[in-house]
Image (cartoon, rainbow, N blue to C red; front, side):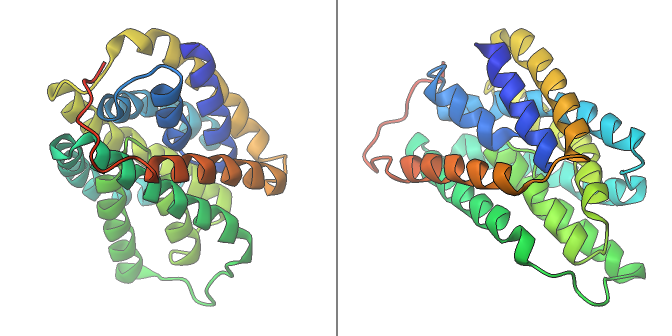
Length: 253
């Protein structure tokens, strides 16, 4: 089962250029009955391997901007640690509701993606650098807190504001998530929020799934996949939002 969760995560993540944490976390909580916080920490560890596998595949297609990835990661590595510590301090029910809101935000971004036009004059020079640094800082915090790679925020920012091509933005976000996710993952591990026993099955599935998903991304239309993906995220997000406020903090398994 761990392998299948990793495979699904890698396939979806590679196809739409995200780490796949928005799929992995609900599956670990719902199927493996893992505590929410431990699911976030474990997801982030696994997503480091998603970033490596996806970035290599995109790089082979010439779809990675190294400088953009470096700028994104240079601020994300600091805020990812803060995000992980913030998640560790939240009660279980608050973390679940926050994750539900995050899933609905991601759903909205995915659905609006085809209808958002590129800006006429994308940022250049120092303005472009500042945009990438700020984007990295924001997504780093979300990555550490939510146990996700942050590509759903990075990619639109790179495409709409920095003028990067869609596939280059996806490849660059996957590369940036390696150091950023690594810092957040290490912080969660230090806090005891990582279930290491499932990684042996999860990681191979993610690597295989990401390789095929990233390869198909250059040949397949995202339309139908985006709608299915959005439907799953909406269902999961609403389910999380319905978490009772009075729920006691669950024991992380």
